[in-house]
Image (tube, rainbow, N blue to C red; front, top):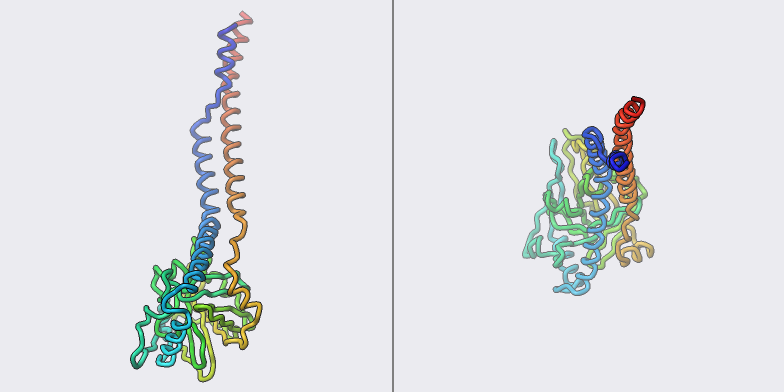
Amino acid sequence: MRRERHRTRRGRRWKPNGLLIVTTFVAVIGATTLTYSSAASWVSSLNQSQVVKGYQLSVEHTEPSAAEQLAAADRYNESLASGVELEANTRKPIGAGTATGTVPSYASLLSTPTGIMSRIQIPKIGVDLPVYHGTSDATLLRGAGHLEGTSLPVGGKGTLSVITGHRGLAEATMFTDLDRIQPGDTFTVTTFGRVLTYRVFDTRVVEPSDTASLHPQQDRDLVTLITCTPLGINSHRILVTGERVRPTPDADLKAAEAPPVTVAFPWWLVFYVTGLALIGLYLWWGGRVRAADRRQPERRRGLATAAR
């Protein structure tokens, strides 16, 4: 009797076979792969919101003061022969502007301990990004970048500022949805407390074999946003140009003063945990069923012995 009970207890042990383990492992890898992009983008958005908060605080206590830095940026723009060249078969624009006279270096202007010069908000596509000096690959992985050689993003007649951003990164959204922007949409650039809203009047895609030039226009205050397209290929370039709205709408002033909107609820985490729970249930049940199957031969042998 004891031996039979012992066998029964042993027969109920959970023992998944090799195929079940491999299937479970593949399922876990699949669930992780499916949620990686959403998770990485969520973490990146959270990090960028914290960076923008730090920028807002640093501007209040920066030295030289915000007013002094804005005045220096205005002088720089006045001395800048600005321009942008989009050469054929290249992914990045080139700032063709040069400053004349005695002006501070580009890197020293609009300088903060965080390294951020501005903040760009595009309400239609949910963009709220820090803007850094330059457009190196390392810079564009952290946020948007201001193209050196174009006007600093502080506004003014006869200025053209260019801000670039990546599109289609797995780990961050950045300018991924810039192709949704249409004439009439607006975006806001905030630089050291100066809030500037721009209304889009021109959107275009530049072919890889085309060469395009952008230049300031007299008495117009312009900003152009640039990114690559199509997703995953990045052979063409999207150009979105807006002209400043005067005066800046009150709603945009309030939005610029407010801290970044808290990132959305991480639904990807709910789906991921639920998926793992279902995979775990599958593994447990599959192992349990196999254990029951293994008990059948023992029972048949026991019945045969009793019949004799």
